Length: 354
Image 1 (cartoon, rainbow, N blue to C red):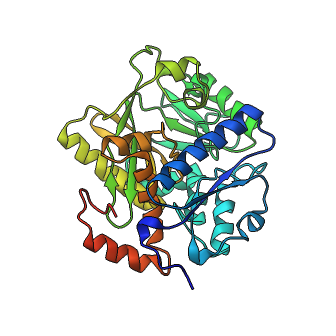
Image 2: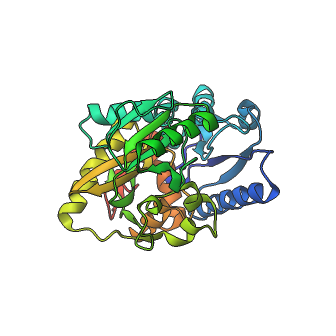
Image 3: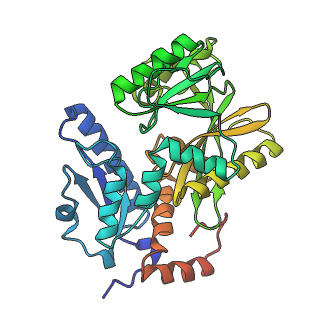
């Protein structure tokens, strides 16, 4: 029989991936931030077991744990050694009948395909930059500049550098050719929105709450080709973009702007199938908020935008992790009932905090 535990004390299996091909420093860094999250969740009442995934045998690492007695906190970006395998991790978790945090395998597969995301955003009436997909190095009549060229199936700004922003037809063709050769996948060309950029964290199911949005401040960069979040800005401390882009939290926005931003982000969150939490990347130009990207499996490290926004909203790091766990617990066959009754009897300071 499943344990009869109040949802605030649901036991957690914190699943994260460690690729043996990474450097020792990279492996140690991932282990360190995973331990930090595990300790934070444990400190607020969840018995937490850390489970590193070193290969594709998820059955082996979860076989000693009962789905009836745990929630999996899914913090895997991929199966080690298998690019673009983020949805496959969740597919295995689903197959093993664990309740887990975050989006379904179907939603993760969708989010990993920028072409499908763009089409869904357009079909849903959500503003997104004009775009076109290329399988050959040609302009094919594209005449909107500046433009930005991306690999259609990469994430975390992989492949995005200042050279991704192109100003002429010649630069466009050259960058499309680079993406085709380097990544062996189609190139997505978008109208480059040279405006304010916001990273907007949301959480919840049914009722979706926007946390205080963060603005990426590009004011130190005068060249338009530098006014973007590159791979270096996210992953390479000491790089020009990592050091030069400042984060404004909360973003300086008026009430009407915040309401408009929330409407757009909640619509994108729902359209792409985010669950429990997610992050929407947005740019504003001419009073319009354009959705650039939807991240159903957003980073929840202590220094990432979601955790920082939650802290500003009054949640400690442990409470942030716990809230995500308890949102997932509502889908558990036993704890789902306990979660609803617990929420009904607890005085809560903001919507859906359980």
